Image (cartoon, rainbow, N blue to C red):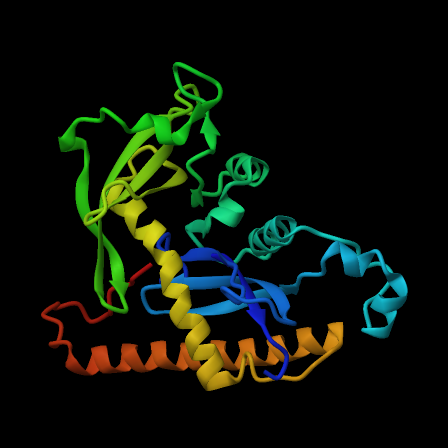
Length: 299
């Protein structure tokens, strides 16, 4: 998962296909203030979630002023990069480093990038990427079909009411539907546009674009789409327990050092919690009825 996190200074089961990388992107809402904007990569499973990569975003107004950059400890080799380019680089590095995950997901600020989605397709990386209603896809009828135009007139039985996970106020329940696109792709893969419609305000619809194995169910795609919100807990715990946003750094290397240490501490706590859950489960599970003298492998 990839997302952007903004701080005012000083203020998948470990190797299963259910692990998700998410791009995280956050900024201070509703106000203008001095802040540092980072792009983070998170790793999320049903047993825990943590941040595994980070980059400080530098606007062009900074990278165009090399003297200002030098004063902040920014090397002359550091050029301007969009936040999407940073996200793509971090996801690419996760693939190269063989981090075990099954899916990539991101919010619309990143998922709207056709270039990134195409790169993930080419690498056969399964993904569910949020996008805007103005995005377009290839269908049987058009090479530039607006995603919002795929769902009007869809039979009512095509919409399924499902939860996409636990939220602060209970289950996040929406009506969901999907329409297949890019029908001339590989036989064992599918592209879908997924619509998520508010139950109380049905005029509010958001969209995702998915690339996945042909037998992937709508419920599984909903689970992956909902995993993006689990990362909010990751940020909250990293701030509260590891001081992720408790710093006064003004230099490029200082920001990365602080984030790295906070992320390492959070990853350690996450692993310890998962281990404790495993221990508790082992203590409460009934004894095996197997007559074998050897434990059965989970591999």
